[in-house]
Image 1 (cartoon, rainbow, N blue to C red):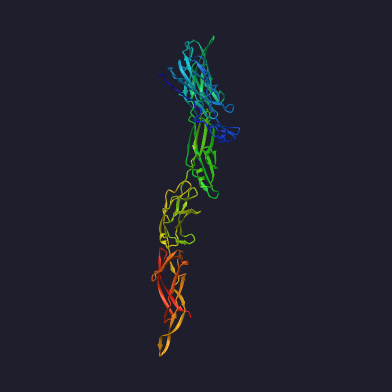
Image 2 (spheres, rainbow, N blue to C red; image 1 turned 60 degrees about the horizontal axis):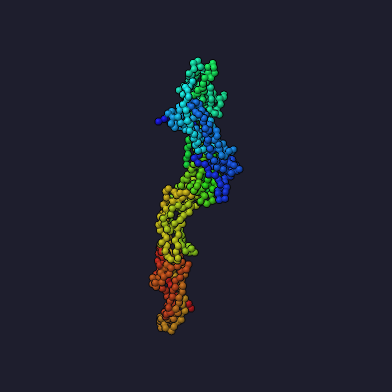
Amino acid sequence: MPTHRTAVPALHATLPLALATALACSQGGPAPITCDTTESCPPASRCLARACVADAAPLARISPLSVVQANDVVTLDGSRSSDPDAPEDAVVAYAWTVRAVDAPCDPPVVAGTTATTPVRFACPGRYEVSLVVADELSVQSAPASALVEVAPRSGAPLVTAGADVAVDHRCEGEPITCRPVTELGGAVALSATSAVAGASFHWTVEPPAGHALDAQRRAIFELGPDAASPTVRIETDGTAIAGDWVLRVEARDEAGVIGVAATRLSIGNAPPVVTAAIPVFNHAFDAASSRFSAHGAIGVLAEDPDGDPLEGRTVAGHHVGDGAATFQVEDLGDRAAFSIELPYTAPADALLLIGGEGLERAITFSVRDVNGAETSETWPVVIGNRPPEVAWAATVVSPQHVYDAAAGEYRASAKLSQWRDPDGDPMAQGDPTGDAVCPSYVLDASGMVVIQCTLASAVAAVAGNFVGAHDIQQRVRDPWESAAVASVAQIQIQNRAPVFTKNAFGLGAQCVETATCCRWEYGQCLVNELAVSSASGTVTDFVTDPDGDPVEWTVSQTGQTQVCLASQCALEVSFAADRTCSESTSRTYTMSATDGAASTPATFVVTRSCAW
């Protein structure tokens, strides 16, 4: 089996894998993206008539080769390749590869990236030549292929040259100089022989297309160009050196040209290497302007393995799905900086900064070396979030409570903890508190948790269902996530027992003296018996509750009871008509009042007196 060797010259280290979708203008299609320059359009598109238009792939074509004999130098021609976007676009790079189909020797290695490139097939057989071209936006064509039949040479070669050489290169020093990497320190040993005795030789250099010899690009024959086996030193002053250098030797005798042979020096090129430090960036929230912002930079190191000078450096930003946010990028040399600003008007706006569907932010960094090899890297800009954390927390608080008669509910509030958000984000209650009476809380401007405890009730003495211990979990969240650790506090809702505000009440009754004597002394009647009418009355404002709670009071002697608000409590008292020797009669009641959590006992005296 023959050895198959394929070497692809470096056109671009990274070429897009797919073209950007063309932006339709037809009814029902998406609105076209407007633009001022191509740089403002998505990748693989350009600005035409102030609209971004997707780039079409170029077409690669290989011109047919005429009859090829072994050892002939032939030219691969891709100049018929074209770009359907012309004249706005054009083919700018060519990548040639050759594969031996059934030839018994290695195929030629093509380092040239131009439309035409010289090659020499070392032995007869069939070779497959492939060409991929790229346009100005680095969009590649589909491969074009051609089968080359190489015939044996019809006669023995009259002139031969040394084997083709493939080497790397290195640029170094001050001022910078680029040379091939060889065992002779950048020089290449050449050799030529001729079957004709007495032949004279003359070497010439054909540099890669577009790299003409000049003051900055030199080919120096150290023994002179007329030696049969000279040493050639190729070097540049930091300019392009990679490609196919054809070192052609011509043999002559007195009758004229005997023949021509060539050694092809293929100087390879490695694309630039770009490395970057890509952290997760923090953000900040400014409550005064109600805006999220994020600022940072991706550290960038661009190096060339060959030491080539770098050029054509660009930094571009890409962002979609972020609403009214701005995204600006700037090349600061050793880093690519960015700035994000996002107005915040509703909780949903937070997803335009972090986590929104379809949200994309990226920085694309591109650079190429002087030999035309380009590297392009795209890095996502990831904005992180730091959840809230506890700054201060109480373990037990003991608030009083009140009863709101108008609303018909018991109420208590307390400050349980103070929270801070490292990013300054708006904060709110995250998880449930775990308590039905105290289910919700709010955070004030200082980040203080203010718990609200309520129990709806009709007028009933049920404070016992509200007061006492409540264990409250507080896990505060920002717009994206809850705190890692919850704070737990116990609320001991306090209660004050009802208070009796009266202990006596008087009733007036009509009294009439009778002829019956109650008390005699020395034959005289000192006190007559009285006929006393019945009397009744209503006692109010005799009980209150410091918390405003409904109370239930009971008279033990009569079993009389009532549930009421203190201002509405009414005790009915009465005396039946009777005959008595005393102008006043008292009756003592044993009473109690409770709000459902605490009780208060009392004695109450009602006195009936004669109203003359």
